[in-house]
Length: 132
Image (tube, rainbow, N blue to C red; front, side, top):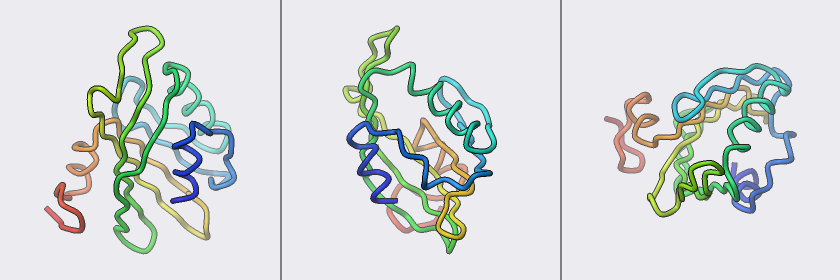
């Protein structure tokens, strides 16, 4: 996850080699919720979201290994809405991604625009390593 986030922190979203060919991608909330399957679906969903922002970047703040196959990454987002001009960094925007990993590939990715929603959905508290 750390190498993936290193690329995303630079605004590099071109590599998809981390994803399983039949990945399920879920945008749980935010401006464009939905679900897509397979690499073409992942690319379509991600590009659709990314196209709404200028200079969109994700900076990992915390990694939580939930079990042997799931990792939750809490992160800060930065970017500016192309239409609205909204600056995400000024809002202190925190989001999260839940990765399901099997055989070294991400088989399911649930993206949360709201960090609080991710923690609520998973029954976790904001403090690291504690359950709600």
